[in-house]
Length: 230
Length: 252
Image 1 (cartoon, rainbow over the protein chains, first blue to last red):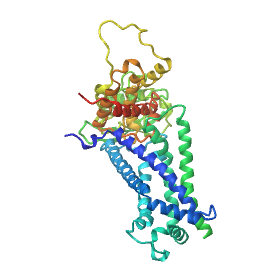
Image 2: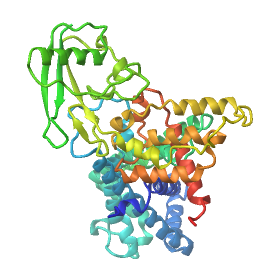
Image 3: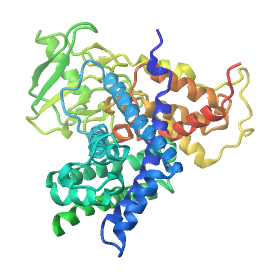
Image 4: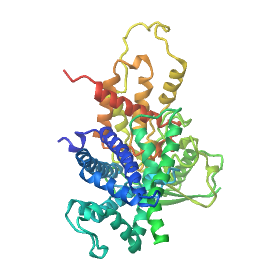
């Protein structure tokens, strides 16, 4: 009997993972760009954030894009789990008794676990914002958000970061984990797509390292700001 | 030198294995690891202690790919670019236990003690790791020009001895370093162009079918490869795979 896992080749799955991963990396930049307006970086930053959030919530191109984005997330996660299951099975019934001593990056060894933790954060993130936007649930009553709530995410964010220290801490930890995930993922995606070249790979690795530090740090600054100044 | 060994003993493929500890009192630090195992077997036989430990070996000069052994958590033991036969007892500290296990992978079942069945590699090669050459007289040597850099790189890939350390080291028991080296050594040369597309498709399909894992770009294979095969081979294979997927013809 043919194994159903073999209908899509291992490399095809990896290539799909890599392409979607790079797509999510770009999306993260856009998301950060908007989020930074939560901070008082210019005079009317709150209005600009609200306007950006309104645009993202109503523009039809963005709405189509949103479906693509969710599909990208889901396929990236499902393939990640599928590949990991295959990998565990590939070791066989008997495992090594001694711990592996090969010098490899810790970031890549635990990529599936960091991935799963990010997925859990994503669920929390959906619960906190996206489901409110969809109108599935309403924001916590204590936040006292005016109706329509989806137009007042700025107030919601400020309220969450200023009042819920546990949320802020989870948020910060989640982005540290995301940084670890991206640290390996960035260059890994290029390698999977076959883009390994003695001239360019060192540059890709450096850009990946910078990206995996700067972008999560950008997200982390926001709760830290409110923890200090609010 | 006194050596304490913890070795995986398993009577046959179906038997339940276990670790057995042996102590060798008089081992020369200049002995190779396999010579030390020979000394152990001599002791086991002459003193009627146990059946000799089964392990694979052939050339004992690091080119045949026969020796294996997962020693203290590393394929071919400590040290870069060494096979087990080239590993010396001086690389170990006196009195410390040396744990010896067979390769562990679903596609490499244990045959006996430290010997695993690596036929899976032969099956992958049989699926597409060859080139078509006309028989009869040798072709004119200068009719196909090969650029020096490419020929060097092809040689580097071809120096894979197929020992399986990459599979043993990989947390996913993936054979991609082996498969990609075997693909790239032909792909870089003109003689390998005829089967270019089919080769990558068939070898990758066979690799998947045999139950090897996927690559997560951890590069443990590269770190443990006794021949220094680089992961650029894997990128090359992926690139070829994409090209074959996008540009390959439909089967007629």
